[in-house]
Image 1 (cartoon, helix red, strand yellow):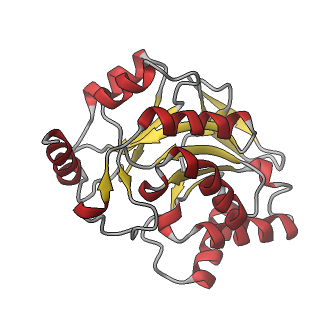
Image 2 (cartoon, rainbow, N blue to C red):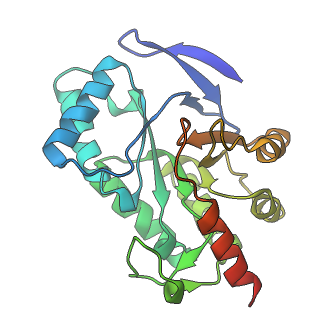
Length: 241
């Protein structure tokens, strides 16, 4: 359900209700391909806050968590916002941390970079697992190992119970993976973030998520190079085992 709320400084913006009981600003600023340096990046994030952005999306491999944290701290210090609580921050668990015992250390590392006590939303970035310590990009075939989704999701649920994340969810998950997850999840995912745009409408996935109370977030909403090739590669590789 979409509604509208007013921030502490009077800014109005549309929000969507999540199954966790939280609300998420409908429009967010993605920080992927963060390549213009920390100073320009911080200025860009501060300007985004000034013009009304309240939702920021980051992830460990983007290299933007630390700069975003600096920008938010400065925005609070200068009175641009009254507190971090006015913002909705999403970050993600990367593939080489997709191990049950590494989930809590990963979110705590992310929080240290962001200079925050909690994230509003923490997502499993991809439904695949890489060996600990392997490189971010590109993922190499020899680094990929079978994914313990049940174990990792149990650790994600612990993140929410400990207050490290107010909501938890997934990214780049198919209906098959979501269906598997819902058979054992004690806390269902609030969000599935996927590439979705006029060229790739994801109608069946949207319908499935709507039936199961999962909000779909679109990245590359104006179009992108697509992640379908990567998904097909991983599917074919693991289906042979």
